[in-house]
Amino acid sequence: MTVGPDAYVVLSAVLFFIGVVGVIARRNPLIMLMSIELLFNAANLALVAYARAWGNNAGHIFAFLVITVAAAEAAIGLAIVAVTFRRSRFVDVDEASVLRG
Amino acid sequence: MIPFAILAVLMIASAVFTVTARRPVYSVVGLLANFVCLAAMYLTLQAEFLAVIQIVVYSGAILILFVFVIALLSSGVRPFDVGPDRAPRILVPAGIFAALTLIAIAWTAVRAPVSGPAAAAPALNGTAGDANAFGSVADFGVALFTTNLLPFEVTAFILMVAVIGVVLIAGDADPVTGVVRRRKRAGQREPIVKSAS
Image (cartoon, each protein chain N blue to C red):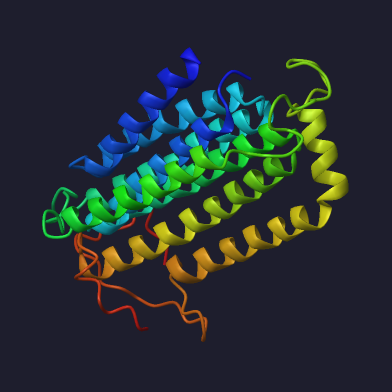
């Protein structure tokens, strides 16, 4: 392995904070959800990099579980976006302040 | 070293494009490029099964779900454009915060590298590409279905809860009473097949 795990962890940190800036700075709910997917993937990259560095595939299992949780999160988040948009035609999460039933 | 550098540049560029794109469809394209590059990055880490899962689940399922929702929402009154961003009001403090934390993490990762038995050259069972090598399907499957069987079953439960939640949130029936609400939707069409009454 010519590239050490440090490089992968630094890349993972870069991707994570690009995603954090996306979640903070954008107001389109779909792009915010996609930024959250970026966060999941950055964490997965760090997990797989450490699994390779230690020669232990528990990191792979954990990344697999994270992918599953990300799929569930995307499905529920998109359902909420669709329902809220159907009700009030918003494209701005600041306008979606009425989420009580 | 060369593949890692190329993939890293591509991943950062596509992530920045995803975050800064004007329309959600462009963001989906950037995210797709990011996921494909991440799958290739998994291959450089000998995580073959995870690379395939990354393509199948993320690029094949989650991104298609995003595309469907975008198509569903924008097929109406007005194009589903991006609203006004919080930038530049909050972009500068967010960027400063992100940069500071990034520097802290990078500094820590360089100062305190991975120590322990695996730091120099981890002894992996098998060479890459073998049927039972580290990260292959057999290796992953044995670990998933023996040591980590309970987390795997909990995963199934999580997915079931997600499916039920989506049906309750987005379905037409009221979650408590089960009564189907009649909504007035703009531009609701007549049903194509009229029921013979």
